[in-house]
Image 1: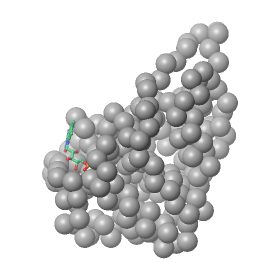
Image 2: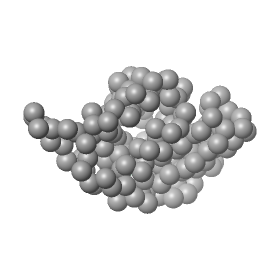
Image 3: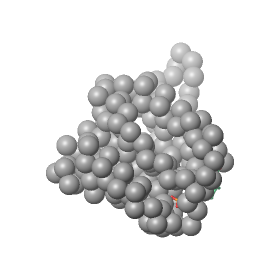
Image 4: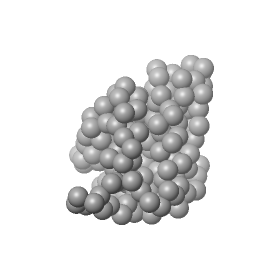
Length: 183
Ligand SMILES: Cc1cc2nc3c(=O)[nH]c(=O)nc-3n(C[C@H](O)[C@H](O)[C@H](O)COP(=O)(O)O)c2cc1C
């Protein structure tokens, strides 16, 4: 099985990255092939949709989003990781998710190939108050439902701020690894 993880934090070695590393280590324990992609390494521009009769929803730019979506389509399981930014997912991750639309309408690669694809979500946040956590996860849950992906589970690190702080939470690292092993 192929597992691809998209790191939606600009901080390499940060909390999101560290947790994703554990999910992928778990997936490797289960003999899956893994790949980690830093979205920050790609210049993702906002979606530029064309509406109306003339719309073909194919992105004429054929830019890096195409390469990233190819990776997603080729994977059996996808890991999406994000820090909470302003009570939401990071802009980096959202730019990527928005770009799924063109492909979904344009050549249907995502719509045809995502059913049954597994999804793991990783979230890191400084707050210990989780009252808005569901609001952060909700768009991802809806996106998974829309794409008929199977939501395997999420790992959420709360109260982590500095990069690498999540390493002080061995229980969370173990949860992340177990989730990867369950793929
Ligand atoms: C622009 C920005 C906005 C943030 N907004 C929130 C927030 O709304 N809630 C929260 O709990 N943490 C917030 N944080 C803190 C990060 O979520 C936290 O530091 C997280 O551990 C960063 O993960 P990373 O190390 O993977 O980048 C914010 C951080 C930044 C830089």
